[in-house]
Length: 523
Image (cartoon, rainbow, N blue to C red; front, side, top):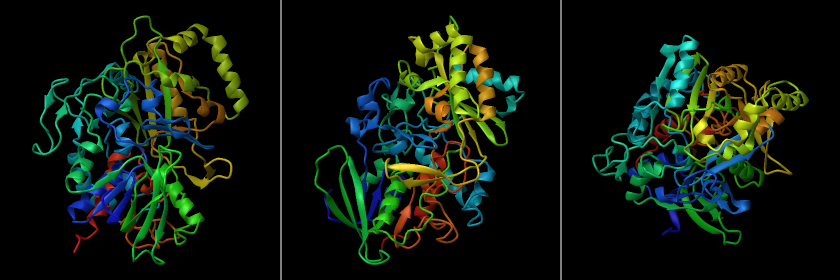
């Protein structure tokens, strides 16, 4: 950090923060990005997720990786931390949601979103280096076989992903930005996208948006966490003071920087708790009462099937998500893989049993032990867990919401907001897992919290600072500007105001592009 004053301070460096950094710098503004996580280069990523020190973010245990697991009373959340945010650990997948996303939720009617966002989706594709996956691994063929069984072959397709393809492992000059970007290497289909790409093939944000932002003078301070944001006057028209300190050290001095504007881009688990604290402590008393509301889980279900066939195929081969099957107008299924040796998740899963009552679910787990002891033993103790395992990501556009609040005992807690809280049990997902399990002699497994507590696990937590026509209906307006304050914006997953039903990274990027296009060039 070379200055004491900036035009904009951006809190977080994920998809929204990275877009904001580049576009504001292009418009002539001085920009500082404050990121809680660390910088990661390809050589810094772990070979497997058993290397918790390099993989997992849990500062209380002195673990400073890039993958975070958060367990709340209604949902378990998987997210990313580090310079580049979720792009470091996401599955590269870049789908555009169906029409229903643009015409539902709290942003419905504020704009013709599908038309307005179309050019920004196109630009997001260009910046993120979106390419069609050219390779199907065994897990993709498994889903393709399922599509035939369901007579949905026409609804099975490859994914568009942020990965450079070519001759596997071949190093090339920047293939995306006329040679002005960083050198790259072609994907070798190792399946380790989500434990960090060690081979320079994945188009993480530090290779596009942040790379060019830095070239324009944007400064990035990693391993620091924002504690307070204070407006210099009632609505921030005179600017803000931002206080922050080291996130990877227990003992560090609080630092201060001033700015004319602020962009909150820390993701749902960064932005929403911070806004709740700032409202509670009266730093930003004008914030809407909707802060923390309309939290969505993307109506997801994550199940795992581990082949116990004697000669099992290697399901770790390919990219993290290489294909997608549209089950019906509301539902999608994607096969997800981890690279060879990444078997940590076996410690967090148990046989998937669905029932209204917890005691029945617990008894059901023991029932699996007695009904399928050999399969269960082979699943738990296999030496090739990631090679034999396919994670099934099931998503729906059907909606249900929670409210995120500050807890007295725990840091955060959730409350039911809509009539039905998101459930760990989606019958369609369970049925598909059983069908696929039969094909590879596998018992469907789920996160232990899904089974014991009946709560879902999601890698796509959304909302908490949604759009609304008024301050009573939303935290931000249709241009992502926070109600009650000047030059203050939200650009991350917490702004998503309806259920996309597909991987949301592309939409976060496109909506942030639109928001930044509305900010005038510096005079």
